[in-house]
Length: 93
Image (cartoon, rainbow, N blue to C red):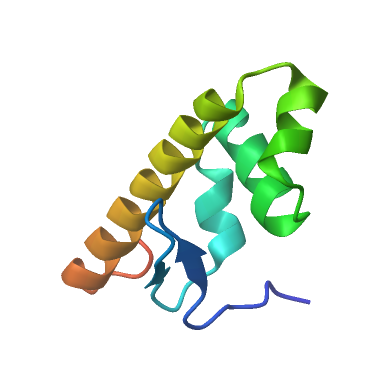
């Protein structure tokens, strides 16, 4: 069975707004992140663990986790915007 495609996924921004992500395999995009960012995105967004729990779990200040999540969202948005503008698939390879 192939991967399930996700249409119009949403990720929250630091300002509490949501940004729409274009139709793509979100899991594939997340897998492109460096390991530390990938783990954080999966635990916070997919497993729905709050930042204060993650902070205690991995012994990293909450502010640092927020910065890392911001960097991860920025990378994902850049990849997604780039693939949409070029019209060449996902632009993630």
